[in-house]
Image 1 (cartoon, helix red, strand yellow):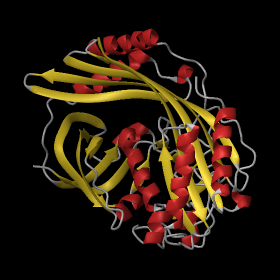
Image 2: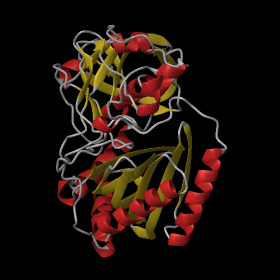
Image 3: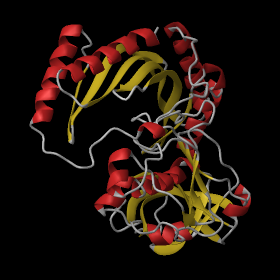
Length: 438
């Protein structure tokens, strides 16, 4: 059971009071208690079972425009006292920065909506093992499966964020995760793939048998891959991959990237960066959402943002420090996006497959090939060749490349959006990307 709010509030309040006593003009403190339990099976045998129970405290002290931060996992009174004293001394010797400050008081969260982020139910280890056995049994029903690895992780946490302007709020969260990696073998060839389910509440998890079955089918389908010639072709990104497009957008429109001038989207506010059919939202108030929160890591209230409207960039993701550098107010995105997603597309999935005589369907990318300064994109990839709307054979050892300025404007979205992550996208088609093969 995670520590109750009263204990965390007491630690945070004491930290703020003692910091102020030692000369801090402002203080920000976060106190967290988290418990994680994981059971791992490999080839139907228990491979690992562990439990972690951890505390953490992060303290930021300000002396006028000087600022420093210190953290620890030891919440004893003596250690916290020592941390505060060290942090104050460091702050005194830190150069001033005119943009250092707590958020404006009027921006701080006041009322907190119940987002249903915590499930008090606990899954005992024997039940976790039982569920994972069901996953692995389903995987081994598929021909050519020679190896499996599954895990069940249960995370519970409670935290409090407070500052010297009177803000003191927190909330509990839970996460339940089941995953399966399956290895398929045929002759001397081996392929692997996975499936998973992750939810705030245990009752919302996908059927364990489906997880094992899907992981196995995904791996088997990749057997006997072919190499293809280099060409320009329409690329279809599976939902597991398409969300990466939004991850790039999120990084490129962070206030930090914009203020530093290290983003290919600098100076693009109110300009068309996607086609007119594209709308993108960041919604922190989705019930049970994996990225949901009432306030950001600074305590600023979060609201739903329409980041892209009819293809036009409408807002950055703004925190206090870099917001001040840009002469903009924080919009509650210290720590990044919350539940980020494309508005669902209008094209049926099967119609997307048939959109060209030949498309390449990507199910896996390899490496991190996004240059946020130039917008250039190049990654290794595996997937399937699609001809006349039908998947005909697996493809491997290719590289796909383009520039996000072009990629964004050539996206067509399918109508199969679902919320499996904190960043979500439907299957999407990008016309005219370069594929390097043999």
